[in-house]
Image (cartoon, rainbow, N blue to C red; front, side, top):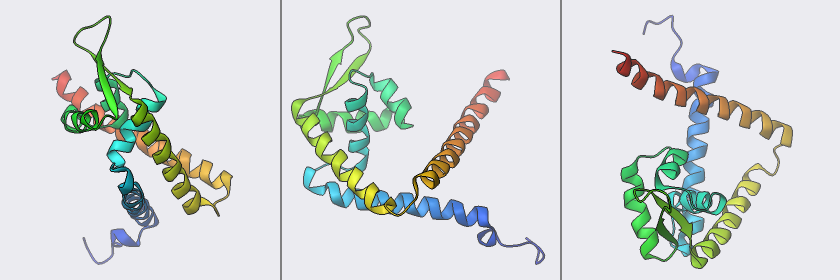
Amino acid sequence: MNKNQSLPWDHPRFRSWIAVARACQLMQQSLGRALVHLDIKPPHLDILVNLFRFEGISQQELARKLLVGRSNMSMLLPQMEKRGLIERRGDKHDKRVLRLYLTLEGRRVTEEAMAIQTDLIDRMLSDAPLDECDIMTAHMERIVSLLLREEREPAEAVGDQ
C-alpha cells in the first residue's frame, strides 16, 4: 500500500462492515448471557427456533438453513436430545433420513428463549424507525445472497474442470 492510498479503516464501507460484525458478535454475547439460566447457547437457540418453525425438518435441511456443516449438527443434536429438548425420528418414506422434533420441554425452552431474544432485539432497536430497519434488512439480505453465491461459485468452477 502506498502513501497515496487510504487505509481500509478510513473507508465508510469498511467501517460499516466492521460495525455490523462487532454488533453481531456483541449481540451473540449478550444473548448467550441472557440464555444461561436455560442452559442453552445461541447455536442451540438457532436449532430450537428452526424446529419450532419447521417441525419435522431433516438434519440436512436444518444444517443448510443454519449455514453449518453436518459435523456441527452431529455435535449439538445429541446434546439437545440427551437434555430432552428434541427428538429424532426416522422418515416414513426414506429410512436414511432423520427428522427433528421439539419435545414438550424443548417447546417450553424455545418459547422462553424466543421471548428473551425478542426482548433483547427490541431493547437494542427500540429507537430505530421501522423504515430504517427495513432498509438495513434489505442491505444485509443482499450481502447474504452475494456471499452465498460466492460460496457456490468456486465449487461450481471446480466441477466444470
